[in-house]
Length: 393
Image 1 (cartoon, rainbow, N blue to C red):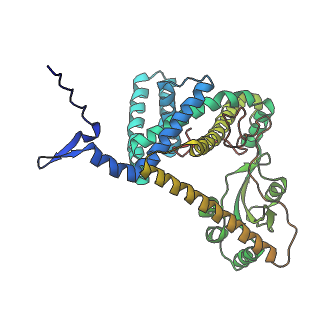
Image 2 (cartoon, rainbow, N blue to C red):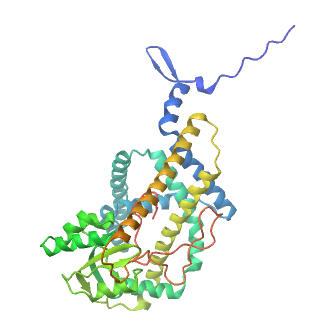
Image 3 (cartoon, helix red, strand yellow):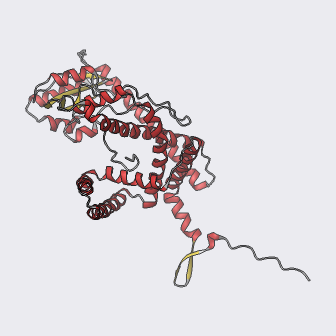
């Protein structure tokens, strides 16, 4: 008697996910539009997570659920700093008084407030909670990779430099960044005509971040990462005074002194450990950013996408990136031509460059390499918490 062949296994893609008027709507019908709309972004994030896991395993690093929890808490505290700081202070005060119940109530309230803020943020950014969780997990692995390398690299002179940045004399200034001498002359004419410095900065500054704030820069000390000439000009101004143009990196700067602040009466030994923690956190944040860029670059270089829809999206994304890079290069060339065509060139003092690392914190290696063995430059300004979800805490 012939044995009947077993019926073929059902195709999971034919599984109904919903019914409408008695008709099934299958997984296959759902996946097609999802892949076309969000598939590439989700795929790239998942591939980066897998690569981060592999990098951590090669480095002998274990990541636990507690690490993920800490990363999430630190990220949310950084994203919603203004809303979180007061509650965190109240939690610390309650714990110092031995009021565990009160501290727990405050933690629950903080978690509820942050959840509401996060939901609003994700909605505005069109990011799903699942995507956000994947990003946090990537950052957790990268932070665990970065921490021991950064910890071993911080030297005593780095801590002393950070102390001077945090507690030495500081100044608060506004700055207008301009691309050529023609714009410098225009800005100076507007200031001479009585326009407010902050209004001219908002209208003309090439630095979008400070420009939106009327040109205001974070307070900095003589130990900060700005060039010596820039600091000499800034610290030589009186409140309300505007500098002559300052030139560096083919850009020009006008600086206005807002206020100066005397050194704080704090002994180095009394805050040594706290300064080291702040320096460590800032350096880890910078290193994680470098690792994340390297990770993204390696994944894009090494991945082979088999799905035709995703492959077409991927190739289009690469073409768009190359086009943007070419546009930036052409823009820089245009600025160079404008500068060379400008009349009456003047030798001017140098303006700020990228902040160098404090002594003892070596620079990061070039991208697209295996896990770097040394961290990148730590920020030379006062360390701060991250404010973006991709940056962690």
